[in-house]
Image 1 (cartoon, rainbow, N blue to C red):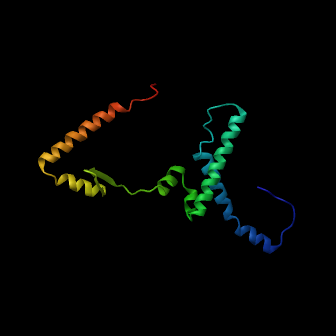
Image 2 (image 1 turned 90 degrees about the vertical axis):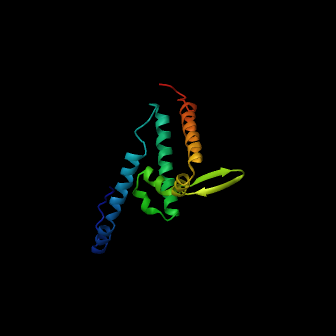
Image 3 (image 1 turned 60 degrees about the vertical axis):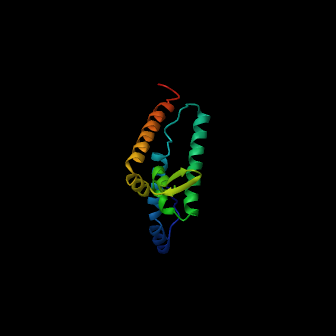
Length: 147
């Protein structure tokens, strides 16, 4: 806090009291930066690397705040990074089905309804295909860096 000894008039004191709400906003921004922007997770002890990390984190924080204000989403300034990301990323879930050079865009509920209304032989084929794909995906993505 910056203080000086210059006397203030009654109007100035009232103006300072009205500006006091800025303190909580500044403190919340400091808390967000300190707690949720990984300022304590430094992989290096070299001073230059620590300084670079702090500068880049502060720059990223500032750019995100400017972006949120520009987009008219200043209410997200007080949210954590994962919550901001959840709010900004598109959340519409669609399923694309391709068959014989045609495609359909379906919501998950429409796709589920389509699968449940198929005839028994077609349902069996889809179930076998899904199980095969699941097995292949389990073995296709090994850990690139085993512990």
